[in-house]
Image (cartoon, rainbow, N blue to C red; front, side):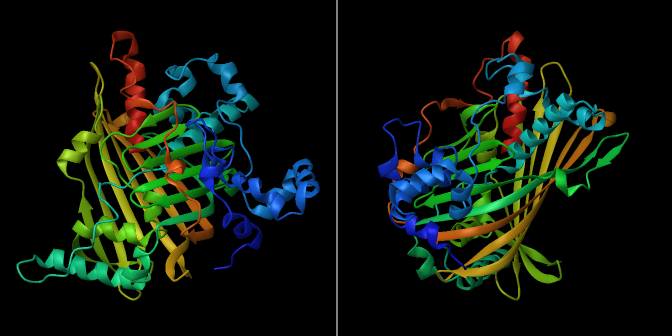
Length: 458
């Protein structure tokens, strides 16, 4: 993999814990862009103070040179304040009116500039809420050893899965090499778009690629079970992280909140970026057959979330019924080439109808290349379908979203990466997004909306 000298000369001397401020709510990775942390050392590789001042006056040159993300404004948009009146996080108007009104807006867009901006903002919120930082279905520790291949007294589905995982580990670089990796870093670019909206009466397709939201992301990982991801897309920034004990998310429109249930890895890491975590994830899976995917014969490994975890992840009126993950491993290369992820949530409103939300992710992983001996997928494409259905057929909606990404840089065992880089934000709410309010009569609408958001983010 081709590496950028300007980036790595700064990265090797970078100590995220050194640059961290004394406040727990601020970290190098939580600046306006994670990669602006590189500017701390730019005097060392751009020619001293004079050169540093030169890049400050012309920041576009520094961005081009370092490959970092462009800075974005944290917090709500100004036009959003005008619409919502600067309400609190719980203000349902500021949060939007839910996915139902969002779909209606898609089907009846007004030509005014203000309406177009509002619809675009709602589009982006849905994209980032669903596709930004979804989690894997089950809890496990990446430090746990893989099960030994055993045929005696073992079902054929289980022993076959163990054999496939051994082949995958070998094809990805080998267990010895992967065990030597203590931390990892990846940076990539992405495009997101809402490609189709379907209701009971009409279907709207978006075939204009210029309407796609573009941006980038950075991902830091550290053993055991710690990760931090930051996405900057369309002028909005979404952050999520795990310190090994809890998982949290932050969006400008909801603030910071914890994720319900046990600690789980980031799904984005399973998309060809973390072979060791991927193998550990499928350790309890079963081989359910074979399938040809994009012209390649694959073995299918499937795992399901246990009822206890589903119950722990449910909150308020939102009950998660199932969460299933399937991995497609190439019979030719042994590598993971496709992931299917589906979860079903039931929301029972107070005195209203029961509504179901089914979210399905399909991700194709491509362009595997070696990075320091480890096979990493350098591009991919995800299609997410969000299906809302219930007792009234006319209220059914189906929304299709897509994301394409490429990986620009990957590094392992980065010097200076410490536990301080994974500390949750200081303003983190102890309860989840749906637990942050009581279900009083006047708050039921807001609570239902929060439960819906949490259900979609699972």
